[in-house]
Length: 136
Image (cartoon, rainbow, N blue to C red; front, side, top):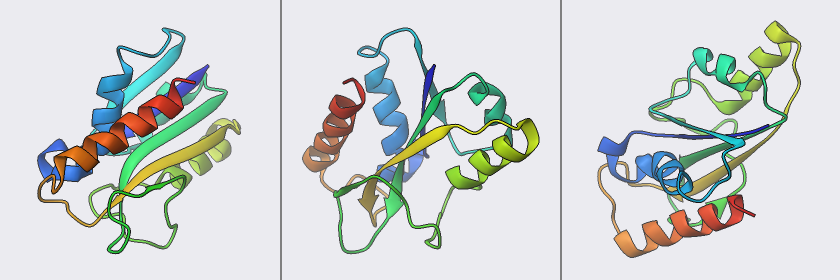
């Protein structure tokens, strides 16, 4: 089973990117793919991921220079601003505690604005691009 986790704080403008992607995917994705929308990543999410063969994380990522660019990873040493645990930590816990190793990917929209959606057209274009890629 594939699990897609979109996370972020919708009250913080572009930080809600992952949640918005999940909202759109609900109408487009087959029922055998599990969609999870979360405010932030927490260890409890591992219980929702145990049956997964593949996990995809979707989030906004801080980057001052490449606003509205899409990336397939986040900097491990970068700031994680509002999220308490990075995806790599959840995957390590899953491996170490439950002895389950699963392939995972991270899809991020790069942004430096966590107060509002600066350019609505570009923001929703990023949501559309990631959504289109994930429904293939």
